[in-house]
Length: 256
Image (cartoon, rainbow, N blue to C red; front, side):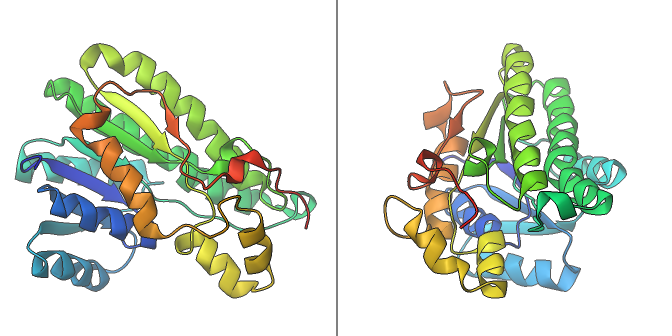
């Protein structure tokens, strides 16, 4: 057991976020779930964790809005006195051919996936440094941070930028005992991937065929790696991506 560490998870009402939140609660952490969904939805998620014996609360916030992020951090420190782990997981995607990507789509995806990660990482790190907390910051990347994926130029760019953001943060924050790492999932049968396949069912067999291990990834399998990255077992790991992608990054995702 890790003790009652205070853990913040963004995008916490999505499949990956909620699977990770439940896992961290079972590790003995007090979990703060954050998302842009209504308070009622957040409270339903909190109630599920509490029903299973965990501790949790919900704070609604938009990670692309720095004022909302800072306000959330202020509330966490006011109510709990510290933040030990920040899992910046919120993300969005719009599947559009490069020639058709609009400025609004570009700004939306980069605003959440990259600017949102910057907002979360800097806001959390500043407070960890002030409080002399040897904290952990974890970002959700993607196998497409290294492998081009047709019709997702803006999403790939956001995740590729996130890699260098995390590495630079890791380098600068190491002196404060703060680690920064990423998990890069593959084709997850949940979250954004599941939404895409519901909208375009013809993609499911293509995606499944593109995973060398032969099956799509469950949110719980992502949470397995998140559990490692927020545990004491990862204390000597920083600036690193754990590619938990079933081998997806071994292939080029082309224009099937």
